[in-house]
Figure 1 (cartoon, rainbow, N blue to C red):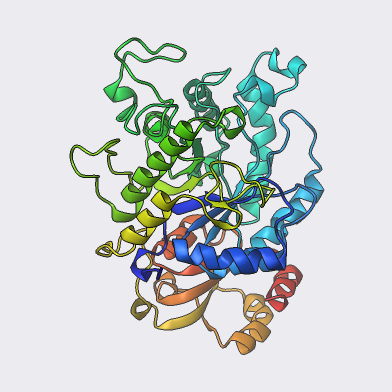
Figure 2 (cartoon, rainbow, N blue to C red):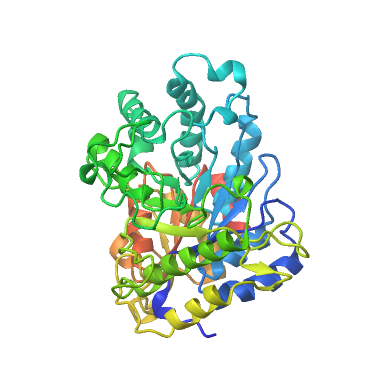
Length: 443
């Protein structure tokens, strides 16, 4: 199956293995070929907090236009070695990683020690932990994705999210809110894929913990409609959202997988894939007709590539015994990639004709002028890569690859995002002169 490059970057993603041991050279060699066949755009990876995923693994993904999302799953209400974690974040940023998720389901009772859960001000105590990590990530040029919540949950997810955003505003965490990306578990909850579509505006009778008969709630694939409505109400803006475990009935550890459930899940994933790739609804009358998925959805990640036991795989794995498991899914992918190409949009990489410059180094400017030491420190890098150098974002947008020198205060993250939307591969290098020089030498 040949990939049609007009579809890059794809919003299709997969959860990689649910462990942290499948990062060997042999793993990469095998799976990178499969990722290309699928036109995969995103990959959710588990990361330890004290050991990095190998550089060759991450750089190889990024080189193939696959964006890694790193899940740390840090324990809530436990002390973290912030110095150790900062070093890890610096390394990941240097290698081109953009998205990190620190926590998982902080609105769930099971995520907290029993004594902590019963105390007051749960949201405030969670933010006390989240804010320092989020700011640390932003300082290193990473995007701290707001952690996915348990749909419903012990502390109702929509109430928890609204309270978190409101309190981030109250605490004047502008830099976090400015760079906000949400994550959401897009389970079907055994409902059709349009369940809850339109969010609270369409279902005003639904309240936290209460879904009246005849009404619908956020516990379905369209959970993003509800989260987006909260963002609009609190922040007056849409935010990008990353979907996780898309189309599963619920969390994999809670599923008793019968043949019927597995088949239904494959059908759900096929419908979602068609909506993502073909950008059009299924034909009228087809089962589980799914409405279009909005452009604010950055990626839709399916569970699971393969599980930790390659011989006896998770029943929902796309690959079992290292072979495609569901003809329904893979036939759908093949057919979708043969359809008429999607017209370029802000999230579609433009043709190489729009990038006559191969590599551009974007330097910061200041009120007092430009920095001579920036020019000095990048000289070896310029000679090595024969890169164009300048201060213009308009010129940088004409380059296939952009290396940004400077922290988010001198060149804001919005500039990098705008360049990425133009189809540029963008990396940021920040720090003092010695640090920048060291990072450039390693490239």
